[in-house]
Length: 231
Image (tube, rainbow, N blue to C red; front, top):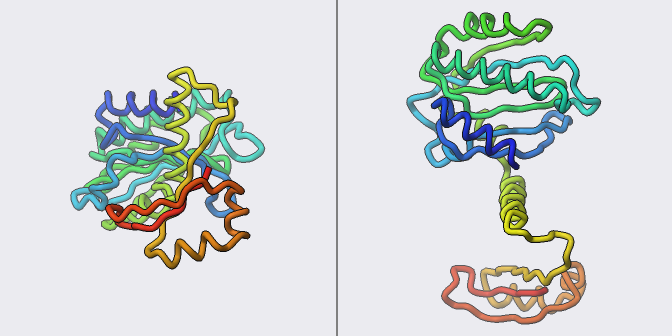
């Protein structure tokens, strides 16, 4: 978690990121495991009408890991390339970095802008300083921000995993030892009492969740009023 936070702070200082709320997650794209580093903070504003163009630069890694992700040895150079591309494309194309994908032996940088501008020339000029690194670049008119919403932004499951990781990191910073066993309460919410009763009476469902249901309270103040809790 520390490295993504540092990178987000660096983006904010350069004025390159649209927000300072960046985080990463792992996903499967076209059958390959990838790491996605994305600007989460802009989601409430997406699609941003003033930035309908998606710009990208894909850089070939020189020594990826066998699984296609970046190695610890090459990561500093890839960050250097990313910083250089970000600074140049932001300045010449008026583009803002919105996400980065690492996998399949590539690091892909994605921006949104009002128009493509001199993307090809800018990327070529930057990459001249990084001998041995191949690259491709391009742009597409995406006023609905299809790639951001469909690939870069995490699914509900991945977003929950990211929030869980943040919680664990926060607990660790306060001195918590994750290895120590502790009681954890869980809830299932139902639209009505009949659904709750059916779950409560289905022993297979209960056993799959836990063998100890401690309470079955009612809470009419909650939008989903019927729920089961177990530990």
